[in-house]
Image (cartoon, rainbow, N blue to C red):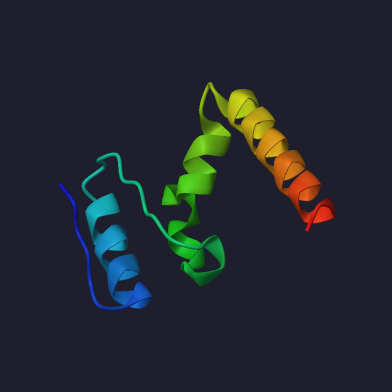
Length: 74
């Protein structure tokens, strides 16, 4: 199920209420704009807890290196 709302706080409220149902929830959005109470449902937090966290970290490192190289040639 995909839920959306017109503001970050409205989506955060949805996540807080849905979390009470003990279902898996993934909140997309910039972590700095999420309420502290739902940070554990953010994409970054879910990925950090996953079994593939090291793979994700390696991919992010590779992406950062490519962007750093690209900036050198601009």
